[in-house]
Image 1: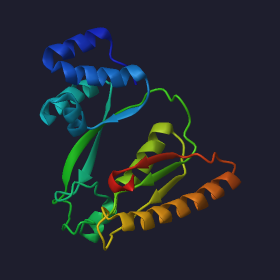
Image 2: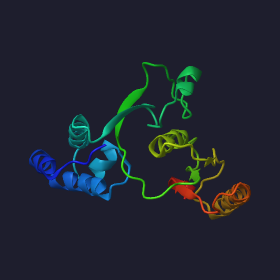
Image 3: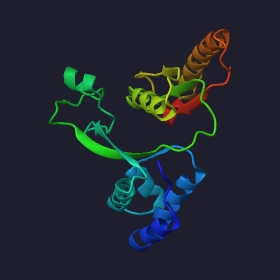
Length: 204
């Protein structure tokens, strides 16, 4: 996947906000693979989601990005899997069928790998099922072109607020115990004891 040349960036500067184009150029200049979401890019660049999406589509049309369409729940905006549609509802309780789901686009740049990822741990937030974790595991394997062992940890639904200190200590201990077990397991399989960790919301 080719990186845009200077003339392409100049043309984009004529059509879109400077901060938006500069933000994208920084990602391309790193040379590493990345996934750009219009709503996240718009927040960083202080512009509308429509402008961010339009700019990303323009880069995709030139072969610089690959557009990816994903289904999301209209209620909680979690990624919707085919299994959820078959079951008929999202984890948040929203009724789902093929006509109920919303769609959104992300854009992938397949760049140069600076290092290999041996294994990954994903920790989602509390009081949510974290459908993004399965989606992330698939996407990272697609980018790196090989299967990456991914340990998915879900806190699940808590009976007490995650803001209470007493509850945080208990759930933190559970995470640490599970991580130690997985690290021991991976070391025995001759993997590094230090995984890449992605944590979201109260999962941090």
